Image: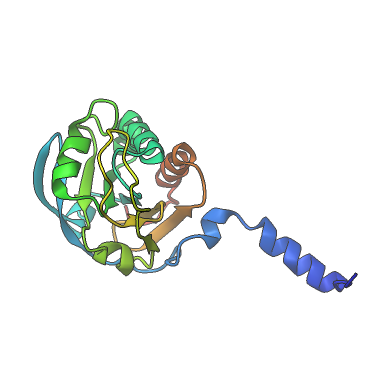
Length: 199
């Protein structure tokens, strides 16, 4: 049996002990968040979303998710909708991003069980925004259906949430945790932005 030197063992243990949220996303805290514009939906209506414009009002939580109307994404959207008041109290806004069509997102944004007309979701049909944030996009398995029984015919971005400060810097990159914990960590981040952090 091969022996691992004690120093190497200690280094390996340190790496394994690192929170998944630190190692998951390609863009890291301190990086400049790529600006983007996209068609978004809120309460069943579509509109043009601009990250640059949203940041003028305060920090923005940009959360990427695989697909509307799927189990984990339904939980995450519902949890964000339930906590939207706490995010607003901390001065932050929320935008979800997926490769869903704007038509699917209009329905998702208005669904009372999920976005509940409280949070916006943006359409990144070609994966351009996800790629700018260095996220992995996978093809949906052939024949996969959503929770409504409809075919999923678009790519699936990895579930990662970025908290972006008003100056366009990433304060946190959260991935590798379950959907509800993802929301909880994002909320703690916006509530705990240090004094002097651009809001």
